[in-house]
Image (cartoon, rainbow over all chains, first blue to last red; front, side, top):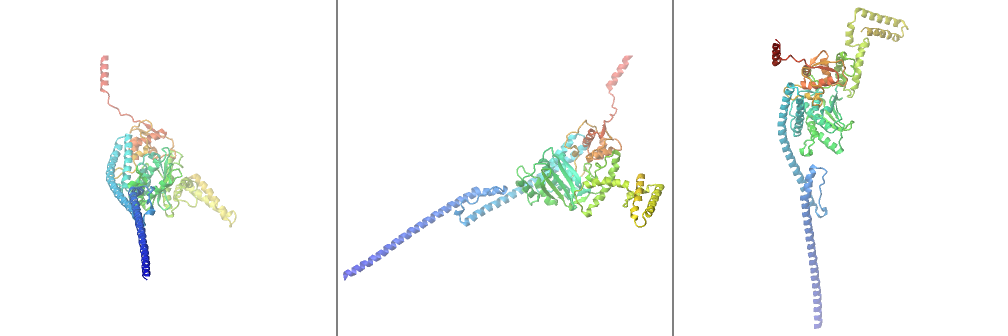
Length: 474
Length: 117
């Protein structure tokens, strides 16, 4: 019995011991697993920290500088995260935000520095501009006092310097620094021409219908500055042997258009895109964006376009280089006062030029000139209500001489003008009697000839004869 | 070319066409200009044409032409030399005004005349 009990106890003890051992083993196993897990987590955390450190190093050494560079050089690559997989979403987002914040800060700082630079240059250029204006005035007086042609050259150099200074001032948001009266459009174009190195290559063709078309006072000087910049581009980027044709014409919408063509090297697509962005008149142009040396031309035009309401467009020119178009809207145009005379240098409109038809001789030139000037107001008044097409400068040139001949040959034409009536007055009574008699005879013979039915066939002939008669007399 | 307040719009040097000195012989500001019979070609510039028209009724001096054209004399000389070179104008140098006689010459003449006795 005791043996049984002992055996049972031993058995129970054995089971308990087994269970205990098992539990202990399980515990130990669990502890080992936990330890391993902790270890692994530790390693992962360490790796993450390392990766994060590397990312921060990357951020400081590469990403932020690259982002700052990319603000001025749009094509520069900005590196991203080094090992995107190792960084959790939150950290990656924060890092990217850090890059963005740095970019914004750089941009703001740059804008501030640029504004400071502009204001400093604005002050300086205003001072230089006023000094150059004074020396221009002195040179002007000297020119009239002394006959040395070197004063003219000096004046030109002064004008070039003045243009540079003025352009810089405009770029720095300054007022163009000069008030003008309403100024003839052609004179403004010539004024812009005179401000450019190589101005002798610029050929201005005047296709205006209205000779005294003028720019409103507030737009005159800004327009001259803008056009001078475009002309400077055209002469600088084309061969010195080529001409730079400038065409001044009126558009159908009562505006005007100035075209500048050059046979230069043209522009590639990138440059063209950049130039068009500048010409569109952006709100702010940073000096630091204009390159080194700064290319100010289009930026200056863009500033003026945005402020004064004319517009500029560039495209490839049929001459091989670029064509720049400055469009002046109708509200900036006016007509010059009659008491102001145009400069001698201003080219005459093509259609009023006496050269082509009046090559008869020296004596016939002056009246020829008068005769061609008379139709000008008529032509100018004509298209205003109609808003006729622009590009027909050849038509009036061909029409003018024929009009003069018509007054001589056919004074008895049905649409007789006042001038012809005046010519008729100058006739002697005998001549008048003859012509009336001829007319009467003609009418009578016409009525007699084919009977009453067809007077139309007979009537026109005798007046034609009588008109020949008068044509000989006059 | 209107002096006075504000900046002039068209400077006189525009007529030089980028040249530093006029072509041909130097012209005095009192040189007399006469129009020839040669007709102007149709592509003549408006300033050349205007100058020829000024001379149509008769002769004028360079400085008078300059005043009519509202240009300085130095710039007008460029126009004139161009037209003279093209045969459209004659330029005649001014007749020099009678200067004072050289006193020493007269004295020597006097001495010579006296020595004849």
